[in-house]
Length: 351
Ligand code: PMV
Image (cartoon, rainbow, N blue to C red; front, side, top):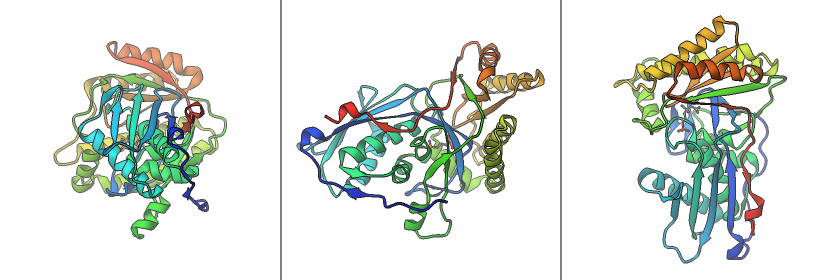
């Protein structure tokens, strides 16, 4: 892990009119999965994970401080947020307020271009964008490492969306104090030499998932006899993945990603009661990926907390892979993504 830089440097707030900021962030898809928390409050994972940030489905989030407001006001995709979504965003804003030493409530307007809660990483782009916009609105100056730590507190996978391209999220030191665990758990970029990847995304069902990833992780860690063996093998997968990325070996990257994801789903299937996100349409796409490989195309599947499948391939093969996947799920939506940028402020909004 690299050396820490100083993180929070408070600077005085400007006038109210200046405290409206907007940020954009993209989802990421893990090639080595995060599955299971060792600390639910701080969102510290049991294992390191590694992902690719996408160039599709951005979330744009605006934050304005309102000196008159008695509570935060959150709008998600144009509708007032309620229930768990509102609760998580308010809890996150409270954390930012504590860091800033400010009490002022916020008006948040967040817009996803990806279906929310469907295992398509809307929480990753959502909390990465919120971390960047809220930190700026509350006048706290955070470097990328500190922003990644902050985004992690909203949703673990959001720590990785702070960065573009490939990023590794360090679990942080186990058995350390809470503060040390928090400090050591952040994402950073990983360089990938000479690969030109695409992820073909098969949206077979865009509806919200029946079991939240939070609940599914908890159940898996608490009850699945396969969880610990998977967590141990995931360490080896990460080392192999870093080596494969370093030498630009797309076949190896894909093989490792596929086995890591299937292993993660195996841990859930063995939970009590089982968590099963994969549907018949998921399996149809997995079959098409196997057929592509038999036909000599390097294509490898990964799935998250939902039935949708992301197929890693060379950009040059993406059209062919997308056609094969479309054939497998004629009712689904198939699109091609590439590596995308990290989270950033939209400067024009800093008025
Ligand atoms: O960050 P969360 O709580 O949405 O968890 C995401 C977990 C997976 O998408 C299944 C895996 C990952 O590493 O992104």
